[in-house]
Image 1 (tube, rainbow, N blue to C red):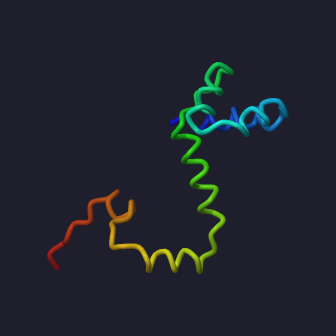
Image 2 (cartoon, rainbow, N blue to C red):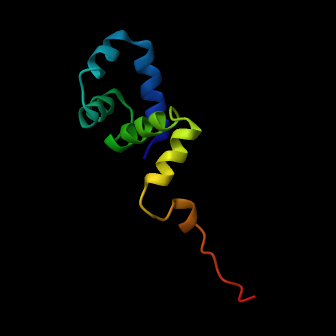
Length: 89
């Protein structure tokens, strides 16, 4: 993933209305393909992760609480990053 490439690409698009119009008609794989010839290391996943984060920040705490209760039991990323060892006490 190239966060720097994505940030630079979005900064350029923000300054160029022609690029904004082009990008507005493209899906994620096409948008990533558009960025590469312009010199930006952008992948489809970069765009979708950015979109996902942007959507996630729009939810309120109450909406997140509701979603957490409705979700089936699953392990979260923070539960698997570090092995939690039972000290045997």
